[in-house]
Length: 143
Image 1 (cartoon, rainbow, N blue to C red):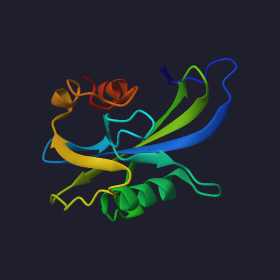
Image 2 (tube, rainbow, N blue to C red; image 1 turned 180 degrees about the vertical axis):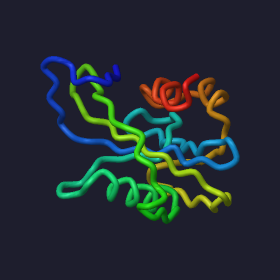
Image 3 (spheres, rainbow, N blue to C red; image 1 turned 90 degrees about the horizontal axis):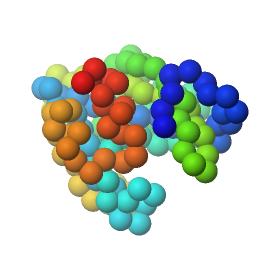
């Protein structure tokens, strides 16, 4: 479950960053390898914030590592954070937006993902998404 306000008893074990990379009304989704947590699902580029990193640094790093997209911090728009509670752990989820004028070449890491796709947010909601990605899309795009 995602919350805008910190729930009672919330204890974050880590922070996650994600980014809606958008070109011409479509967002970039990555297809997770079967052996990864929540394997065989689709999600936006995302990952854990390393120790000593700020969320902005972390999402720039994750975008480059997962997609080959080199984003400048000035181009990454901070959307907000949510408090996420799963049955076994809690984490803070930071969301960014990267609107693009040109469609980049996406180079996925084959050890983490098996494919990538550009898709309209509304159509993404019909896909097999990573846990809570549908809610994140609905909040971000107000659908």
